[in-house]
Length: 280
Ligand code: AMP
Ligand code: MN
Ligand code: MN
Ligand code: MN
Image (cartoon, rainbow, N blue to C red; front, side, top):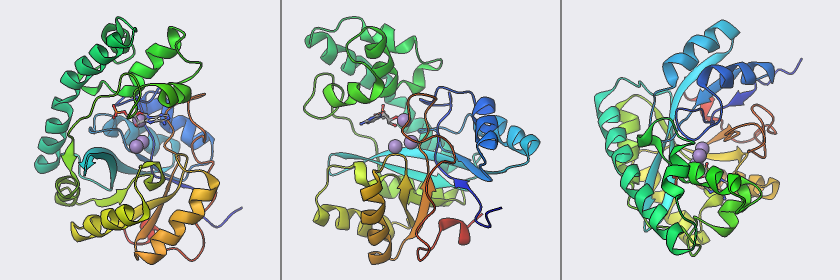
């Protein structure tokens, strides 16, 4: 038996844009050997109570989490909070504010898609989203796949819904310092999610990490399903250079939709300081 616990500290349920209920997600994690799981739905904590109960039943440890949408110099940056108290009012009010703008943004996305010749996308996306306040680009992507505009969700994002492509609309999320302060108010640790996904040059990335640390952020995701194996090395180096804690999480959204399944990532490089040594 391996002496290294299997940590998966980033994934999604139907509490945001995942395909599985919190119950099914935790069961799948347990089946795949996860020892410690964090559920990190986008901008809300609705699934955490259910997930915690099922984790106890399945005998795995559970870390309550969230993934907050932020904007930094016009670029969308995701900030993961780990070990949060989901009942904290500063956090719940902050998240409610972020969610509040998703509906209007979805209307604008639908208008942009209609201008590109794709009608009815708002109703189409909502058919994939139980709670209108959670509507995301992923729900639009599933609709575009179902109507044959793309072969899968990944290729939707190559051709639509991203900067410069049909259906993209700019949007102002929370600020990075605000998101970090909400996470800290709720007793959690703030981690920059999948830094390799952002269109930032090395200087800009350095400025982001500096501002994040200045705000009280402590970690970066190094091993994530949203990084390529080459990016594991790049961001391990950033964790060392910026003296930040390292995190590991699949960013699993559902069977067939994610590169990496729950608990199936490589371990963190041995010399990095894992976030779980300093928290939970
Ligand atoms: P939103 O919060 O509405 O902007 O939606 C963001 C979500 O879209 C992310 O959390 C991912 O689930 C998904 N997404 C964004 N970019 C990609 C991509 N290149 N490939 C696959 N999914 C993506
Ligand atoms: Mn997502
Ligand atoms: Mn993300
Ligand atoms: Mn995610």
